[in-house]
Length: 463
Image (cartoon, rainbow, N blue to C red; front, side):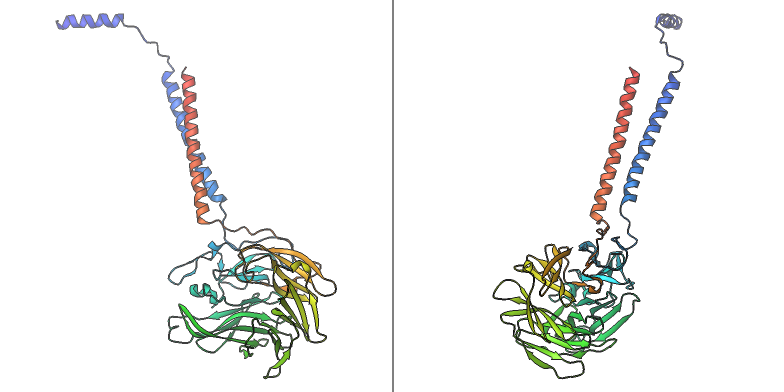
């Protein structure tokens, strides 16, 4: 076929081909659709970012100690909460506390209650605002990772007025295996942060395991262990020892430890008199005499659990062996035997302190070790003893709150405790990660849903 013939044929085909009628605004509409799709995609992305950002900003931020707000004025809260164990985690070569909530500024103000977590971290609950302070106490024995897991917990006691905190300290340095460990008791002024140090000498160091205050909060009595071996990773061989500390003193006077007793209770009075109550007799150390005297006790088949000196009277809470229950013996003045309310019979009772000569603040439960490792919630009770017995549950103590010290000067018969909300603890890293993950998944699902909806809309418009 010649070139001219080919041209003629193509012209004929072109003349006979149907003509497509394309609306003049087709390209404009297409451009608009593409623009809408881009805008919708951008909006979805912005919504997703906003959702994730909102979740992150909603996560609890903790620049300060968790506070349980409530009535103004110093008071004991009606519930003592257990601090989450994650806030007592350790890290680094020195195994120090890692939580940002652990405070090194120990001038936190007057306290209502205090305890030591089983991980070794002290907790002080503010009297005015209910704040939970996790304190890195200078030299506290529980700061040492090994000592926090040792069989014997270090002593810590809040004064009756809540203004001072006495605790066991020790300096366990790199030469602990070859030199005696400096140790003793320190008394912290919670309002000023000032610390008074009372060294305790003997053996390879002395670990104070229990500390008690006089009712006025001026004298201290303590008991503990004089260790024959104390290194950074071991404790070995001990002898029970004790002593008393005068107001403002920086030394301790020894107190003899009665031998051959199943249980002992220690107490110091406002005049400095010390008593150590045993199974059937009581050792008494007057404030101005170095030689103790012995006082026989007519207490039957009972064992002492807690003693307190109020004036010249020793209030001795004892466990009855012949039957379930507890009884109070009053030694001194006119000796008397007074049963506790029947509600405590058959249960477990840990006396905290006497409010006055006839009312005892205690922790009551139905089983478990309420002093060291309670596994169930317990009641905070106010017990009337004597002719007018009474039993009043005035609060609760969470499980996992070990030995508790309460500022009983803040407890009155008219208002034993005050209601405060639960502290708002910071979330764990696991919970934060899960929350962010769920938020990201929700954002992705939102983007996909928006795109799918737009495509279906486009399909409907094209019909």
